[in-house]
Image 1 (cartoon, rainbow, N blue to C red):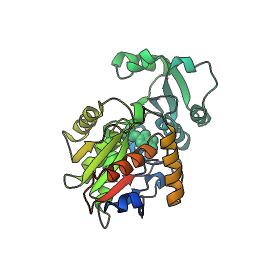
Image 2 (image 1 turned 30 degrees about the vertical axis):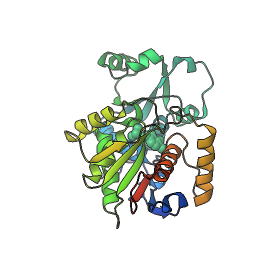
Image 3 (image 1 turned 90 degrees about the vertical axis):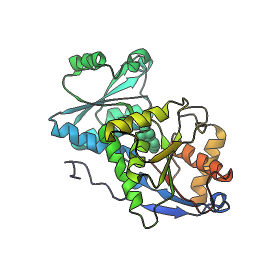
Image 4 (image 1 turned 60 degrees about the horizontal axis):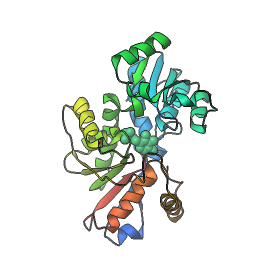
Length: 299
Ligand SMILES: *Cc1c(COP(=O)(O)O)cnc(C)c1O
């Protein structure tokens, strides 16, 4: 992979670190952390894996501006803004919810703005039309030429970028039997499973309510690779009430996990829900004795 001008290189492959946790050990499960949070100082985790192929495509296509979509707390918008600052591409963030337009920016959007992202607030109804050609044409009339990246950054280039995560795990001295990842759009899982291939399981933990994710992952794999790839499944029912909801038991779990293992506080929206789900599944005996289980720390 060629580097991008302005973007510091990523530390590849990210470390695969074994930790000792009684709740897994008691069930004969070895727990490894795939530390993608250490990949890159500005674009951590799966955002680096997903964005860099898009930055390259935009630059090679002669575009000077990247336009993308997200909610008010979107990690993807933040990463895109940071990438724009570093590479010199202009960035536009189309933000869900026009009620936010007149208000002070939250911390996440303030960081986007500080990195030079132009924020464009649209109503929830308009946001639902974000993939329609007419809607994009309207944005082109307004902003001129841009390279569009979908919500969450999940497109074909991103999914192919995430396949490298699976291949890195296969190259480990002891590739994990099961690799689990938290899912928003499912793009990371789609690539991970393809990279792992059919003999190593990938397990996705959706952090949104819905039940639509399986279809999205299949669609993303079909667009990127021509059909279903790898051995993947979803563990539903671990969303704790929905996207970005952090009830007290989840908060307590996240703080305890970090303290127990001397790790940075896990991202609450995704990573804490993944680790909570895996702990519950292990205690329920969902993994056979002897399983080597990897959790991807996506950010
Ligand atoms: C964006 C994000 C995800 C979700 O990735 P998808 O490819 O949309 O499923 C997971 N973890 C973290 C930390 C993220 O920022």
